[in-house]
Image (tube, rainbow, N blue to C red; front, top):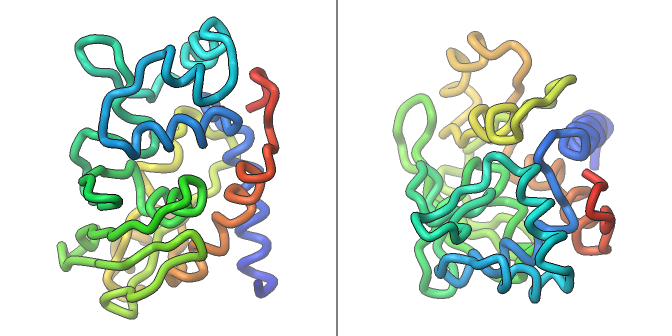
Length: 214
């Protein structure tokens, strides 16, 4: 990791850990269940996380971006059953992600390979890639980049991050968008994955296991 990418990764990791509504200890069990393509009940999530239902309910109360169906079952948090521009196909299930960075980090957290397709935010040109637990491959076009933001005072994780983290067909295609979003920058897809790697490692190592940690 070069020095600039390392600095961005450090800022990104710090910002994610400070963002309201981020419960890293709950993310892996929740994503694992959402990846099955079925709505997730509190009992299922509690069993998957190895926590009491009351602890799960309390955690979810602090996660306002979480999406539910009409029966109160979870259908989205980072990975979602509701359509977004970021199509995420894995294990014969068509799912969606809240942002481009999600598509790069979730395969390692869940432990599967995903086929990702998302339109360039500026031109609408399709960006396609395969993401394995080890990172992205087969990126088309090869010039594709990802926008990254590291706000000093994040609010809602979806508002602070996801609504600003997109795929672009190239750095040139992102110029006009960057001119309107001075706090953002774009990185090649492989570098964007590198920026997300510390969060992946934190989750996989069991970091942030307290229910009030994040």
